[in-house]
Length: 94
Image (cartoon, rainbow, N blue to C red; front, top):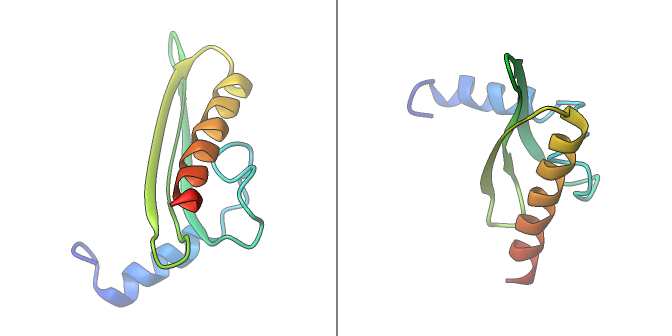
């Protein structure tokens, strides 16, 4: 809430929590897990797929940002999902 006032910051997070995109970052997270996230794509000579978000895990929310470059959005989405799974597994183990 340093760029926006608290009310507008909460509104922005609320909108990001309504994202329906579930092909990568949130693919295997528990369905009831609150996540504020956004993905983006770009294509030039390569395809870029990136996703960032806040996972509200218990009393320890964490921020995850994954950026990929390749030539197959499906493979890149799978990679982001695997990274998200590994991070979540680490948080739940500790």
